[in-house]
Length: 417
Image (tube, rainbow, N blue to C red; front, top):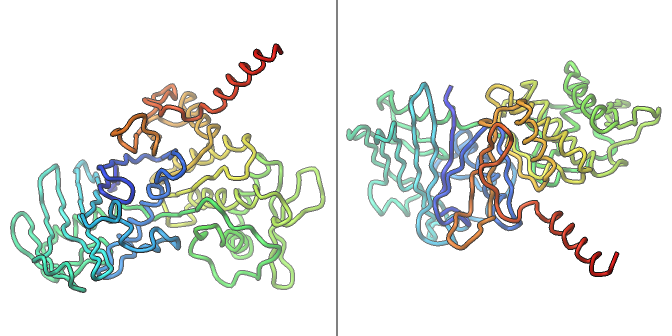
Protein backbone atom coordinates (compact mmCIF):
# COMPACT_ATOMS: atom_id res chain seq x y z
CA UNK A 1 0.00 0.00 0.00
CA UNK A 2 1.29 3.43 -0.94
CA UNK A 3 1.77 5.73 2.04
CA UNK A 4 2.02 9.50 2.21
CA UNK A 5 4.82 10.30 4.67
CA UNK A 6 5.21 14.06 4.48
CA UNK A 7 4.04 17.24 2.77
CA UNK A 8 6.27 20.24 2.17
CA UNK A 9 5.24 23.79 1.32
CA UNK A 10 7.31 26.80 0.33
CA UNK A 11 6.23 30.42 -0.18
CA UNK A 12 2.69 29.27 0.58
CA UNK A 13 0.35 31.63 2.42
CA UNK A 14 2.05 32.91 5.59
CA UNK A 15 4.96 30.45 5.31
CA UNK A 16 7.86 31.93 3.34
CA UNK A 17 10.50 29.29 4.00
CA UNK A 18 10.10 25.62 3.22
CA UNK A 19 8.11 23.73 5.83
CA UNK A 20 8.13 19.94 5.95
CA UNK A 21 5.12 18.41 7.68
CA UNK A 22 5.84 14.86 8.83
CA UNK A 23 2.74 12.68 8.95
CA UNK A 24 1.76 9.97 11.44
CA UNK A 25 -1.43 8.08 12.33
CA UNK A 26 -2.10 10.74 15.00
CA UNK A 27 -1.09 14.34 14.30
CA UNK A 28 -1.65 16.99 16.97
CA UNK A 29 -1.48 20.60 15.82
CA UNK A 30 -0.91 23.39 18.33
CA UNK A 31 -0.26 27.06 17.75
CA UNK A 32 -0.98 30.64 18.60
CA UNK A 33 -4.02 32.46 17.25
CA UNK A 34 -3.30 33.94 13.84
CA UNK A 35 -0.24 31.72 13.32
CA UNK A 36 -1.60 29.95 10.24
CA UNK A 37 -2.87 26.80 11.97
CA UNK A 38 -5.98 26.61 9.81
CA UNK A 39 -3.89 26.88 6.64
CA UNK A 40 -1.89 23.86 7.79
CA UNK A 41 -4.77 21.83 9.22
CA UNK A 42 -6.81 22.19 6.01
CA UNK A 43 -3.96 21.56 3.59
CA UNK A 44 -4.70 17.84 3.30
CA UNK A 45 -8.33 18.61 2.43
CA UNK A 46 -7.15 20.88 -0.39
CA UNK A 47 -4.71 18.27 -1.71
CA UNK A 48 -7.18 15.40 -1.45
CA UNK A 49 -9.73 17.13 -3.64
CA UNK A 50 -7.00 18.14 -6.10
CA UNK A 51 -6.06 14.48 -6.62
CA UNK A 52 -9.44 12.78 -6.39
CA UNK A 53 -11.99 15.36 -7.57
CA UNK A 54 -9.85 17.68 -9.66
CA UNK A 55 -11.32 19.79 -12.43
CA UNK A 56 -9.58 20.51 -15.77
CA UNK A 57 -6.94 23.23 -15.54
CA UNK A 58 -7.88 24.10 -11.95
CA UNK A 59 -4.99 22.87 -9.79
CA UNK A 60 -6.56 23.83 -6.45
CA UNK A 61 -10.24 24.22 -5.64
CA UNK A 62 -10.46 27.02 -3.09
CA UNK A 63 -13.85 25.67 -1.96
CA UNK A 64 -12.63 22.11 -1.41
CA UNK A 65 -14.62 20.26 1.21
CA UNK A 66 -17.28 22.94 1.37
CA UNK A 67 -15.10 25.52 3.14
CA UNK A 68 -13.39 28.68 1.93
CA UNK A 69 -9.62 28.12 1.85
CA UNK A 70 -8.93 31.53 0.30
CA UNK A 71 -10.95 34.26 -1.36
CA UNK A 72 -8.88 34.02 -4.55
CA UNK A 73 -5.75 32.41 -5.92
CA UNK A 74 -3.94 35.67 -5.22
CA UNK A 75 -4.04 34.75 -1.52
CA UNK A 76 -1.99 31.56 -1.94
CA UNK A 77 1.52 32.91 -2.73
CA UNK A 78 3.39 34.30 0.25
CA UNK A 79 2.43 37.95 0.86
CA UNK A 80 0.25 37.71 -2.26
CA UNK A 81 3.41 38.09 -4.31
CA UNK A 82 4.14 37.27 -7.94
CA UNK A 83 6.72 34.59 -7.17
CA UNK A 84 5.65 30.94 -7.47
CA UNK A 85 4.94 28.66 -4.54
CA UNK A 86 5.56 24.94 -4.23
CA UNK A 87 3.87 21.83 -2.86
CA UNK A 88 5.79 18.57 -2.41
CA UNK A 89 4.55 15.10 -1.47
CA UNK A 90 6.75 12.28 -0.16
CA UNK A 91 5.42 8.76 -0.72
CA UNK A 92 6.71 5.25 -0.08
CA UNK A 93 5.45 2.23 -1.99
CA UNK A 94 6.92 -1.28 -1.87
CA UNK A 95 10.14 0.12 -0.37
CA UNK A 96 10.36 2.69 -3.17
CA UNK A 97 10.67 6.35 -2.21
CA UNK A 98 8.82 8.81 -4.43
CA UNK A 99 8.82 12.60 -4.31
CA UNK A 100 6.40 14.73 -6.32
CA UNK A 101 6.92 18.49 -6.46
CA UNK A 102 4.64 21.09 -8.00
CA UNK A 103 5.61 24.68 -8.70
CA UNK A 104 2.52 26.85 -9.12
CA UNK A 105 2.03 30.50 -9.94
CA UNK A 106 -0.89 32.91 -9.68
CA UNK A 107 -1.45 34.77 -12.95
CA UNK A 108 -3.05 38.15 -12.07
CA UNK A 109 -4.11 38.90 -15.65
CA UNK A 110 -6.11 35.66 -15.82
CA UNK A 111 -7.08 35.50 -12.13
CA UNK A 112 -6.08 31.86 -11.89
CA UNK A 113 -3.40 29.47 -10.71
CA UNK A 114 -1.24 27.60 -13.22
CA UNK A 115 1.09 24.66 -12.75
CA UNK A 116 4.53 25.68 -14.00
CA UNK A 117 6.37 22.43 -13.39
CA UNK A 118 5.69 19.00 -11.98
CA UNK A 119 8.69 16.82 -11.16
CA UNK A 120 8.52 13.22 -9.99
CA UNK A 121 11.60 11.65 -8.45
CA UNK A 122 12.30 8.10 -7.37
CA UNK A 123 15.11 7.65 -4.86
CA UNK A 124 16.20 11.26 -5.60
CA UNK A 125 16.48 10.54 -9.33
CA UNK A 126 14.28 12.58 -11.66
CA UNK A 127 11.99 10.23 -13.56
CA UNK A 128 9.29 12.55 -14.92
CA UNK A 129 9.36 16.27 -15.61
CA UNK A 130 6.29 18.13 -16.84
CA UNK A 131 6.78 21.80 -17.71
CA UNK A 132 5.06 24.50 -19.73
CA UNK A 133 6.03 24.45 -23.40
CA UNK A 134 6.97 28.13 -23.21
CA UNK A 135 6.34 31.23 -21.10
CA UNK A 136 3.38 32.24 -23.26
CA UNK A 137 1.48 29.25 -21.86
CA UNK A 138 1.23 31.01 -18.49
CA UNK A 139 -1.60 33.16 -19.81
CA UNK A 140 -3.35 30.46 -21.86
CA UNK A 141 -6.61 28.97 -20.58
CA UNK A 142 -5.60 25.46 -21.69
CA UNK A 143 -1.79 25.48 -21.49
CA UNK A 144 0.43 23.05 -23.36
CA UNK A 145 3.04 21.05 -21.50
CA UNK A 146 6.16 19.10 -22.39
CA UNK A 147 6.56 15.73 -20.68
CA UNK A 148 9.97 14.12 -20.30
CA UNK A 149 10.18 10.53 -19.02
CA UNK A 150 13.80 9.61 -18.35
CA UNK A 151 14.65 12.33 -20.84
CA UNK A 152 12.29 11.08 -23.59
CA UNK A 153 9.44 13.41 -24.73
CA UNK A 154 5.76 12.47 -24.44
CA UNK A 155 2.39 14.22 -24.62
CA UNK A 156 0.16 15.47 -21.82
CA UNK A 157 -3.55 15.93 -22.42
CA UNK A 158 -4.19 18.20 -19.42
CA UNK A 159 -4.13 18.48 -15.63
CA UNK A 160 -7.29 17.71 -13.68
CA UNK A 161 -6.57 19.29 -10.34
CA UNK A 162 -3.02 18.14 -9.66
CA UNK A 163 -3.41 14.86 -11.56
CA UNK A 164 -1.84 14.79 -15.02
CA UNK A 165 -3.95 13.11 -17.71
CA UNK A 166 -1.76 11.59 -20.40
CA UNK A 167 -2.65 10.98 -24.02
CA UNK A 168 -3.23 7.49 -25.37
CA UNK A 169 -0.03 5.63 -26.01
CA UNK A 170 1.85 7.18 -23.10
CA UNK A 171 4.22 4.81 -21.27
CA UNK A 172 2.49 2.76 -18.60
CA UNK A 173 5.07 3.96 -16.07
CA UNK A 174 3.40 7.39 -16.12
CA UNK A 175 -0.01 6.11 -15.12
CA UNK A 176 1.52 3.68 -12.64
CA UNK A 177 3.64 6.27 -10.85
CA UNK A 178 1.01 8.99 -10.66
CA UNK A 179 -1.61 6.39 -9.78
CA UNK A 180 0.57 5.34 -6.85
CA UNK A 181 0.81 8.95 -5.68
CA UNK A 182 -2.96 9.40 -5.94
CA UNK A 183 -3.55 6.20 -3.97
CA UNK A 184 -1.34 7.55 -1.20
CA UNK A 185 -3.26 10.83 -0.92
CA UNK A 186 -6.09 10.03 1.50
CA UNK A 187 -9.77 10.87 1.30
CA UNK A 188 -10.54 13.41 4.00
CA UNK A 189 -13.35 13.88 6.50
CA UNK A 190 -13.17 17.42 7.86
CA UNK A 191 -14.96 18.97 10.84
CA UNK A 192 -14.40 22.65 11.48
CA UNK A 193 -14.17 24.38 14.86
CA UNK A 194 -17.85 25.34 15.09
CA UNK A 195 -20.17 22.38 14.64
CA UNK A 196 -23.83 22.94 13.73
CA UNK A 197 -26.39 22.99 16.49
CA UNK A 198 -29.01 20.29 16.05
CA UNK A 199 -32.65 21.33 15.89
CA UNK A 200 -35.66 19.59 17.42
CA UNK A 201 -36.80 17.66 14.36
CA UNK A 202 -35.64 16.54 10.96
CA UNK A 203 -37.64 14.97 8.23
CA UNK A 204 -37.24 11.25 7.81
CA UNK A 205 -34.01 10.98 5.77
CA UNK A 206 -34.79 10.41 2.10
CA UNK A 207 -31.17 9.82 1.14
CA UNK A 208 -27.88 8.90 2.72
CA UNK A 209 -25.65 11.99 3.05
CA UNK A 210 -22.26 11.55 1.44
CA UNK A 211 -20.47 12.92 4.50
CA UNK A 212 -21.02 14.65 7.81
CA UNK A 213 -20.50 18.09 6.30
CA UNK A 214 -17.75 20.51 7.27
CA UNK A 215 -19.83 21.67 10.27
CA UNK A 216 -21.31 18.26 11.07
CA UNK A 217 -24.64 19.43 9.68
CA UNK A 218 -25.53 15.96 8.36
CA UNK A 219 -24.81 14.11 11.61
CA UNK A 220 -28.43 13.60 12.62
CA UNK A 221 -29.41 12.38 9.14
CA UNK A 222 -26.57 9.85 9.16
CA UNK A 223 -27.50 8.54 12.61
CA UNK A 224 -31.20 8.42 11.72
CA UNK A 225 -30.48 6.56 8.50
CA UNK A 226 -28.31 4.07 10.38
CA UNK A 227 -31.20 3.27 12.73
CA UNK A 228 -34.05 3.34 10.21
CA UNK A 229 -32.35 1.60 7.30
CA UNK A 230 -29.18 0.08 8.69
CA UNK A 231 -28.21 -2.17 11.55
CA UNK A 232 -28.12 0.60 14.15
CA UNK A 233 -24.56 -0.21 15.23
CA UNK A 234 -23.30 3.31 14.60
CA UNK A 235 -25.99 4.91 16.75
CA UNK A 236 -25.44 2.27 19.44
CA UNK A 237 -21.68 2.91 19.51
CA UNK A 238 -22.15 6.67 19.74
CA UNK A 239 -24.71 6.23 22.53
CA UNK A 240 -22.43 3.85 24.45
CA UNK A 241 -19.58 6.37 24.31
CA UNK A 242 -21.85 9.13 25.60
CA UNK A 243 -23.11 6.86 28.38
CA UNK A 244 -19.62 5.93 29.55
CA UNK A 245 -17.97 9.33 29.17
CA UNK A 246 -20.72 11.91 29.65
CA UNK A 247 -23.45 10.07 31.55
CA UNK A 248 -26.13 10.42 28.87
CA UNK A 249 -27.87 8.01 26.51
CA UNK A 250 -28.59 8.85 22.87
CA UNK A 251 -31.83 7.71 21.27
CA UNK A 252 -33.73 8.26 18.04
CA UNK A 253 -37.48 8.79 18.01
CA UNK A 254 -39.45 8.57 14.75
CA UNK A 255 -43.03 9.75 14.48
CA UNK A 256 -45.21 10.88 11.56
CA UNK A 257 -42.29 11.03 9.15
CA UNK A 258 -40.04 13.00 11.47
CA UNK A 259 -37.01 11.89 13.43
CA UNK A 260 -35.71 13.36 16.66
CA UNK A 261 -32.37 12.76 18.33
CA UNK A 262 -32.72 12.92 22.09
CA UNK A 263 -30.52 12.63 25.15
CA UNK A 264 -31.43 11.29 28.55
CA UNK A 265 -29.49 10.96 31.76
CA UNK A 266 -28.84 7.38 32.75
CA UNK A 267 -30.92 7.62 35.93
CA UNK A 268 -33.74 9.69 34.43
CA UNK A 269 -36.74 8.60 32.38
CA UNK A 270 -37.34 11.89 30.57
CA UNK A 271 -35.32 12.82 27.53
CA UNK A 272 -34.59 16.15 25.86
CA UNK A 273 -33.70 17.14 22.32
CA UNK A 274 -30.12 18.06 21.57
CA UNK A 275 -31.17 21.66 21.01
CA UNK A 276 -32.31 21.79 24.64
CA UNK A 277 -29.00 20.59 26.07
CA UNK A 278 -25.74 22.39 26.65
CA UNK A 279 -23.63 23.35 23.65
CA UNK A 280 -21.05 20.70 24.47
CA UNK A 281 -23.28 17.81 23.36
CA UNK A 282 -24.09 19.30 19.95
CA UNK A 283 -20.44 20.20 19.44
CA UNK A 284 -19.06 16.77 20.30
CA UNK A 285 -21.70 14.57 18.61
CA UNK A 286 -20.33 15.05 15.06
CA UNK A 287 -16.83 14.24 16.29
CA UNK A 288 -17.90 11.01 17.99
CA UNK A 289 -19.91 10.04 14.92
CA UNK A 290 -17.00 10.84 12.60
CA UNK A 291 -14.64 8.58 14.52
CA UNK A 292 -17.01 5.63 14.85
CA UNK A 293 -17.92 5.87 11.16
CA UNK A 294 -14.21 5.57 10.41
CA UNK A 295 -13.58 2.75 12.89
CA UNK A 296 -16.55 0.80 11.50
CA UNK A 297 -15.54 1.49 7.87
CA UNK A 298 -18.87 3.20 7.20
CA UNK A 299 -17.20 6.00 5.26
CA UNK A 300 -14.50 5.96 2.57
CA UNK A 301 -12.52 8.75 4.22
CA UNK A 302 -9.35 7.50 5.89
CA UNK A 303 -7.95 10.84 7.09
CA UNK A 304 -9.96 12.64 9.77
CA UNK A 305 -9.47 16.31 10.59
CA UNK A 306 -11.04 17.85 13.68
CA UNK A 307 -10.47 21.47 14.64
CA UNK A 308 -10.88 22.35 18.32
CA UNK A 309 -12.72 19.13 19.25
CA UNK A 310 -12.69 20.23 22.90
CA UNK A 311 -14.91 23.24 22.22
CA UNK A 312 -17.58 23.75 24.95
CA UNK A 313 -16.53 20.55 26.73
CA UNK A 314 -15.58 20.20 30.38
CA UNK A 315 -11.81 19.57 30.67
CA UNK A 316 -12.51 16.09 32.07
CA UNK A 317 -13.89 15.07 28.67
CA UNK A 318 -10.79 16.20 26.76
CA UNK A 319 -8.87 13.09 27.75
CA UNK A 320 -11.78 10.87 26.71
CA UNK A 321 -11.68 12.48 23.27
CA UNK A 322 -7.95 11.79 23.10
CA UNK A 323 -8.63 8.09 23.76
CA UNK A 324 -11.23 8.09 20.99
CA UNK A 325 -8.74 9.61 18.54
CA UNK A 326 -6.12 7.07 19.56
CA UNK A 327 -8.54 4.21 18.87
CA UNK A 328 -9.26 5.58 15.40
CA UNK A 329 -5.58 6.16 14.62
CA UNK A 330 -4.80 2.55 15.54
CA UNK A 331 -7.19 1.26 12.87
CA UNK A 332 -5.15 0.07 9.91
CA UNK A 333 -4.72 2.81 7.35
CA UNK A 334 -6.58 5.48 9.34
CA UNK A 335 -5.11 8.81 10.39
CA UNK A 336 -6.37 11.62 12.60
CA UNK A 337 -5.29 15.26 12.66
CA UNK A 338 -6.40 17.32 15.66
CA UNK A 339 -6.01 21.09 15.93
CA UNK A 340 -6.32 21.82 19.63
CA UNK A 341 -5.71 24.26 22.47
CA UNK A 342 -6.27 21.56 25.10
CA UNK A 343 -3.41 20.70 27.43
CA UNK A 344 -5.50 17.86 28.90
CA UNK A 345 -5.91 16.22 25.50
CA UNK A 346 -2.18 16.26 24.83
CA UNK A 347 -1.37 14.98 28.31
CA UNK A 348 -3.70 12.02 27.81
CA UNK A 349 -1.90 11.09 24.59
CA UNK A 350 1.47 11.35 26.35
CA UNK A 351 0.14 9.15 29.16
CA UNK A 352 -1.10 6.52 26.71
CA UNK A 353 2.32 6.42 25.09
CA UNK A 354 3.95 5.84 28.49
CA UNK A 355 1.37 3.10 29.17
CA UNK A 356 2.29 1.48 25.82
CA UNK A 357 -1.25 1.93 24.49
CA UNK A 358 0.05 3.68 21.37
CA UNK A 359 3.54 3.68 19.88
CA UNK A 360 5.42 6.99 20.03
CA UNK A 361 6.24 6.60 16.32
CA UNK A 362 2.51 6.85 15.61
CA UNK A 363 2.20 10.33 17.13
CA UNK A 364 3.65 13.66 16.01
CA UNK A 365 3.05 17.23 17.16
CA UNK A 366 3.16 20.22 14.84
CA UNK A 367 3.88 23.49 16.65
CA UNK A 368 2.93 26.60 14.65
CA UNK A 369 4.00 30.16 15.42
CA UNK A 370 5.86 29.45 18.66
CA UNK A 371 9.27 30.64 17.49
CA UNK A 372 11.54 31.73 20.28
CA UNK A 373 13.57 34.16 18.21
CA UNK A 374 13.53 35.94 14.88
CA UNK A 375 14.60 33.78 11.98
CA UNK A 376 13.52 30.53 13.60
CA UNK A 377 11.17 28.33 11.62
CA UNK A 378 7.47 29.03 12.06
CA UNK A 379 6.79 25.30 12.26
CA UNK A 380 8.38 22.81 14.60
CA UNK A 381 7.89 19.06 14.34
CA UNK A 382 7.92 17.50 17.81
CA UNK A 383 8.27 13.77 18.40
CA UNK A 384 7.61 11.87 21.62
CA UNK A 385 9.73 9.14 23.17
CA UNK A 386 8.41 5.96 24.77
CA UNK A 387 7.87 7.78 28.09
CA UNK A 388 5.70 10.38 26.38
CA UNK A 389 8.37 13.06 26.74
CA UNK A 390 8.51 15.52 23.83
CA UNK A 391 11.74 15.98 21.89
CA UNK A 392 11.27 19.74 22.11
CA UNK A 393 8.74 22.13 23.52
CA UNK A 394 7.96 25.70 22.45
CA UNK A 395 8.58 28.32 25.09
CA UNK A 396 5.48 29.54 26.91
CA UNK A 397 3.08 26.86 25.65
CA UNK A 398 0.71 25.69 28.41
CA UNK A 399 2.75 27.59 31.00
CA UNK A 400 -0.01 30.11 31.68
CA UNK A 401 -1.42 28.28 34.71
CA UNK A 402 2.04 27.98 36.26
CA UNK A 403 2.68 31.68 35.67
CA UNK A 404 -0.67 32.58 37.23
CA UNK A 405 0.03 30.32 40.20
CA UNK A 406 3.43 31.96 40.72
CA UNK A 407 1.86 35.43 40.51
CA UNK A 408 -0.93 34.36 42.88
CA UNK A 409 1.53 33.18 45.54
CA UNK A 410 3.64 36.30 45.11
CA UNK A 411 0.59 38.56 45.57
CA UNK A 412 -0.48 36.61 48.65
CA UNK A 413 2.97 36.98 50.21
CA UNK A 414 3.00 40.73 49.53
CA UNK A 415 -0.32 41.04 51.35
CA UNK A 416 0.95 38.94 54.24
CA UNK A 417 -1.59 36.19 53.63
